[in-house]
Length: 168
Image (cartoon, helix red, strand yellow):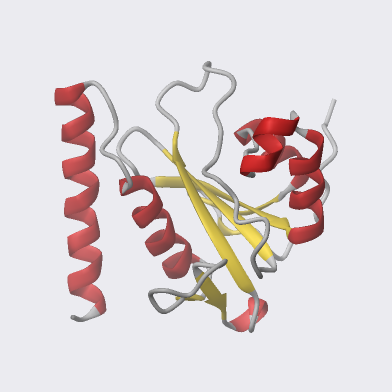
């Protein structure tokens, strides 16, 4: 299947996921994860890992050459809702960084953040013991420890000097 056909298929998956949520009042299970892997690979020069590889979803090319990356996706339907979490992190397996693909209500990506293994594991350790054991981190916490690497408005943000400090 060619790249054009895959992009067309993913566009249709976005439409179906949006329509499902509107009709059923809840998200279609698993769709944000699949879309996140597709979008991260397409937008950040990654190659999807073969099926069955544990610990990571893609391997970097270009700037991220050889980097093993877990990819998490989160559709944000209500910006005001606090406590939103990313999917369970594979803390015991081999990987180098985690990408968080944030999507709007139409399942279109609008921001991608990257957290390095050491920072992510430290954040997991600081969560409550039960959540930490499951590898759970909130979206807000992940954004605080990660760097913004892509936006819908500007594309790749990798060339800027990273500063995760709150601006006042």
